Image (cartoon, rainbow, N blue to C red):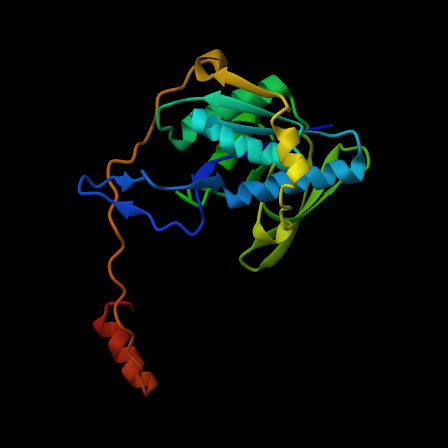
Length: 249
């Protein structure tokens, strides 16, 4: 069995991003890590391997040479090998999904595990776009994944607004991970040392058919407005009046 996990290089989760006078992000002193939701995907793949045995776990990312650091982190956790698709330009969701689909077709995995979204842009669209391009079934926001004995399907417990929903999918499939699925392990010192010797393929985007034309781009950033002080209402009538005045109802 082969499981492909996708990884994105994102700013460390406690980073407070700053915006320059040109309305662009200031990234000079920003430190990066593996997107937290993608860590869950890698951890789940490793747990499946530990439970089933003959499973190859592949970590894949799209980005610049700097993304090697995050792939090494996944290899240190226990992934068997990694794939870096080099693309120096900023990609939109459709472009990313197209390149990932090309990697999936090349690798022919039985399962793709992805974080439900990346914490930097909170887009959350690439997973669905990838499944659509592959014409694979998809299960989102997984808090539990059970593979069939013959690895021909999976039962996924998905977190939805009303609680939990159990979904059955045939494999191959795309499954996205949510916070309650597991707790990612820390890379051990031996794991960090072994990571440097594990294979990492570097593929130019051109070798996958090139980067398709983008459909969207980010032109500027702006900070959120300052939070206003709260008001304590003593009666429901006062609360209703304040909501009307604020045009919230």
